[in-house]
Image (tube, rainbow over all chains, first blue to last red; front, side, top):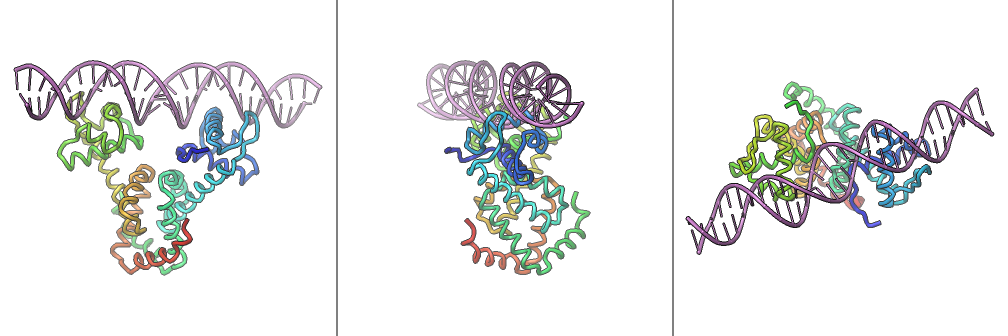
Length: 148
Length: 148
DNA sequence: TAATATAGTTAGCCTGGGCTAACTTTTCAA
DNA sequence: TTGAAAAGTTAGCCCAGGCTAACTATATTA
């Protein structure tokens, strides 16, 4: 109950459980293992840890649901992911797939302070739409030879 | 010799060896342990791994230097760090210390493709100096109540 | 130069987070 | 309704990367 910090790996598990529940109404162990590309045994192990930390309701062979705390944590991670991905795609003009993968890693590295600033920046750039984004794209393309 | 990927932890070791060598001409085990806040024993372990990967020249009780490959890798990591930190400080207007810490984590999460785009963006914003940065600062401050 | 303080290593331990193989439970279709 | 397939668990393994305690090597200085 007092476990504040959680590992990147466990954050990933929480996030896919959250997404699966959102998409299908329920999170199955098999699907978790496929999304994260880990074995089913690893999923079982992670679920035990998450249960110990009070983030998941889980009994062997039972349903997998997030606790209130777990859902809160998962939602935060998912939100970070979206903000970061949106920065990569909308401002840096990085392709969807690369952005998606990079956001998956960065979401564990950036704290709330940084991410909320980033969110603010993305908002600002979007609602400004003063041509900065397009201008940057041109600038960037003209310089692309320099990029290894 | 064929070891492409390296862990975040080992990247950290390389980076501080690189920085210490730059600052003092030599990297001592004690200093590495202090900078990374790990035990001296952990440093010894890491040095053995790095040697095995051909990234440091190291013999027990001997000098610690980077191989050519090690220096290249370390320089890349350090460069990533600088670009990311610069984005945080100069564009997002995050305070130095927070930015420094966040960059330390993000440098392991972002690939070259993303970082080079980011570099490009920072460059663009700096040389533009079309008032976007200051304008964003104002925007951000006026909205700060909304940020938890 | 000998004694001690500092630096570095080794041995042995722990945890997280993977894996496979084998087993158990559940589901579903004949 | 029962038996095979699919899903899930367990046991036992491995590795990275931490740690402490105890040892060894090096440096310092009285």
